[in-house]
Length: 389
Image (cartoon, rainbow, N blue to C red):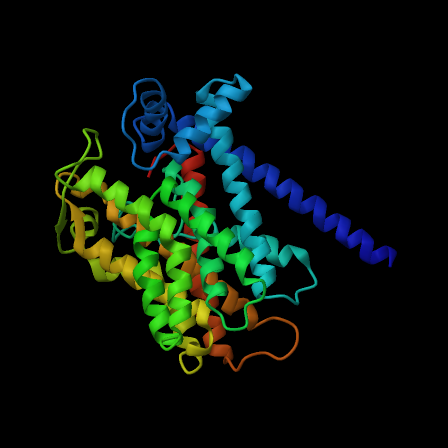
């Protein structure tokens, strides 16, 4: 008993120190990005413009929270923004850990969940420098550190996705509270950045058609759960992309394209897709015979397919290089990486293991390690100030 208590305390100390270390590294990363031309610097200016000059921002949640932190604490925004983003980064890892324990219980060692959560929040596309010197642009990634709105969206998207998929499960318990919380997370995510909801709406519609095509009442209830987000999204669309658009830097037109953003930065859309999706693709191939029994994983794959199609064939007329429709693909990749990790952990969980051969376990583990090594290197480069993207 004493030994077990000591192990728990040691694990807790390691976990806390890890979070503190990540917070401090993120603090350095985000702070230094405020003093170079970057998304971080641009959004800092937008906080002032939105609050003091009345500039239109279609998704102002980050800017409102940042200014509120400044107003309540009296701390200058140049310090509030890095502190807020660092706290959000650690919060996302904590949320990821909690959800990993929920979906894949059984590991006695708490650090399994902690390190897995850190890993899935750090992995990027497998970096091949002779293919593209840019680790993120062109290959894209399940994790980014340059966009404050995406950093805020990430935990909200994860909560909204998990809540919606759980709500549509026939065995779901406490569905009414889940519906309210999920609806709130999705609405807040839409105010943070609409990139996730525009992918998730069609993906969840496909998911319902596949798994619950006869349940008309579920269609109605799910529609009501998404209604606040739909209303917010409609307002954003009218204010940015129609003839009634409000004057702002966001005003533009939607056009059809062919891998415009990807080809702007990388030589091959196919190679880029394989590099960023190697781990989840290998997990899916390893369990292809029983994949349909894993509904959250299937839902995440539907999400990433929709995100991929939007990133590949939809663009903004005046800001092709910005890749604004790639953001939905990025957050979709994080979701599919998360549920692929849940499946991967099940192969090693105590108790009865799924029938996955040692060969597949080895292949998936090697690819996961390549994603993670690339992520650690890229994150270190960002912290060192050697790059912005």
